Length: 438
Image 1 (cartoon, rainbow, N blue to C red):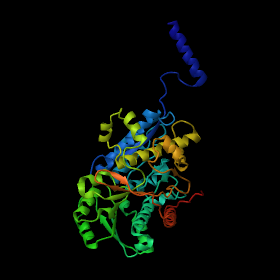
Image 2 (cartoon, one colour):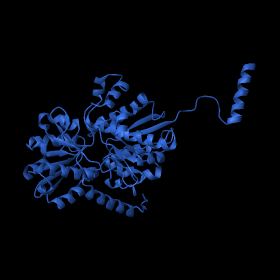
Image 3 (cartoon, helix red, strand yellow):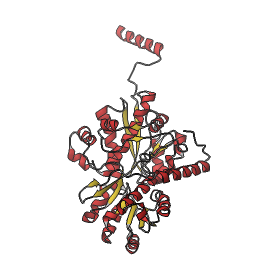
Image 4 (cartoon, rainbow, N blue to C red):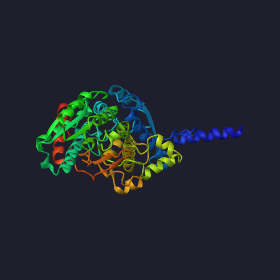
């Protein structure tokens, strides 16, 4: 009894002196990453490897590294089915979770991104729409809370035209060529159209725009038009089941697959495998390498799958969209690590993570430390430039796997950046935003 009284008196003294109750351990801080996923519905073939890539990289950070500088990474999935309304509901459900609320959001949908853009500054949660969303958000003077590095739809479209010019013998050889854009009839699919239109006028090629309605399972009429048109090149902005249907239809009308180039959301394993031998030669844009031949993949197999490579393969390791999600998750965790250098090794708030995104500088040396040497290019973000204007690669399906078939292809920044600034200025005027000085 005397011992019990002594312990209680000591506890009382601790509380009186420090204001801290020396009882059960305080909950450890956590860095919460919400995951908007679509494992079900017509876009599941694209959504499943994406969800698995995010999940596995966050798990790797905890198991290999002990979190981000000691701060545990937590995450939770919310099913959107690639539906904008469900996506916004998931955002509202998850934005307040974690020690300081959501770290950032990766909507993985242009439609959802558009709806979250006005919410981000109000809620203090940054949006990382990596290679998608509103291209004008590349102008950080207007879109303080939105980031779309390492490149955008408009830059990609210009790089595609540069690629076509390389294949045809120069930009001057584009005059009179016929180029068709087969696109998902949504905000996402339409993003490249303004840039392609400007470049058609500039270089004299004939542009045909062919919309495919959601979800893209019926495309017979589109490919009948293509058979009549006989375009020299086709560019596709598709997603989910639309891509595999398009590849099958292209093969059915005997279109030369090496002149059919998808954007970076139209170049996954699920897009080509269903077409069998007919997909051989199909190409797509990319901004990272395919395959599981990098140390980060070895680490995932070791730490996440306990050395079970077969199980990792079942979960899409090395597939294009799995790798895309791993890259995206890395950008998010590195933004937190960047913020910690300024604010301390603790869980970061949305505002602090926003600062981390804006000051992100991922060098070759850092990529090597992360097990991603040669996996992608270095990335540097700034206040004014939330995109980076990064170049693209072209990958080609050889019937069994994707292979990179080009060096990095530059974008037409002299064309695209003025378009971005003009669109951002119009958005600022419409929404009464005063652009900040960078």
